[in-house]
Image (tube, rainbow, N blue to C red; front, side):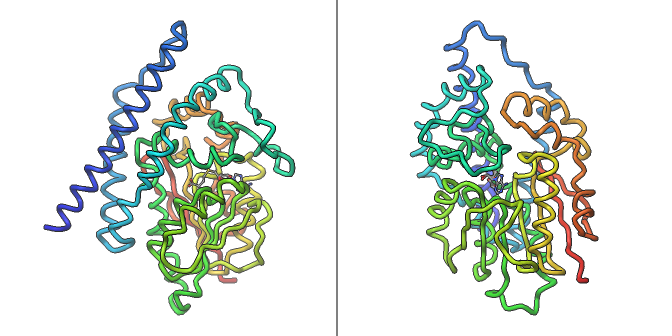
Length: 353
Ligand SMILES: C[S@@+](CC[C@H](N)C(=O)[O-])C[C@H]1O[C@@H](n2cnc3c(N)ncnc32)[C@H](O)[C@@H]1O
């Protein structure tokens, strides 16, 4: 009875988030039309694609619920929403919309105000990804990011992130003789720590680490992790191309929504580095955008995403062979790829010798 009620509440919450995201998208289309009445109308999404997307969302929710019910993570994680923060940030998100449109219309992709320090970052990174004000380099961008991503994915972003948890738990079985407190897990490109919150809920005792290039996103991550029980998560500012950790240090490494934002050669470097810092027998879990190889029916949508949002490396990502890259780095065992809604999951093991 309790489980049925909880499931119903979870489904209602997801439905509610999906309606709210839809309402925001409609508002944004209307606002843009009012500002630019002569602009060409947006291309409607074909009905079969809408059906496919809805089926994928339904399956994602079913798996999300199932994993919680099976005890992979506590059911409370399904309701872990920073509502107060979202409400606080929403007015800023709306106020920022016209500058995003202007930036997109004038194709200004490296548009940073003078207060933002861009020196010292790799050139591929100094971009307004998704036309975001401040790119990844401002506190405002860090404050709006989670809400923007939830809206983009119709309220399913965290459910997609949570799909790394079951393979992570399975991978850690290789270290069942290691005391829980001595298990070390790194989330590479951790952003504002939505993934780390999920990992902490599943593994309250493990030592957790997060690395990201953005100081602003790490500040936000710190804030978002402050109310979590357990040891403090150790956050470091650093480049995934040169991870600031010794070889063979982590029992598992996760990486969520990064690879589509890296140029091809950097993708390989990133995988090589994750391999280096993993212990033999350790597991590497990647969650990133779907690709043509696993979702050919979504190819048109992927092109649209690449063109509409500023995602400069997405085109090359769409048909990049990540499995080949994992093998090239030294991973001998790569599990079959899973797909959940708009994301794919690659799980690779570092060989014992
Ligand atoms: C799309 S966000 C994903 C953030 C987070 N993993 C999530 O699930 O929301 C990409 C993140 O990668 C970080 N990033 C991009 N290039 C990086 C690099 N070379 N090294 C470390 N972090 C990087 C950005 O600062 C940003 O936080």
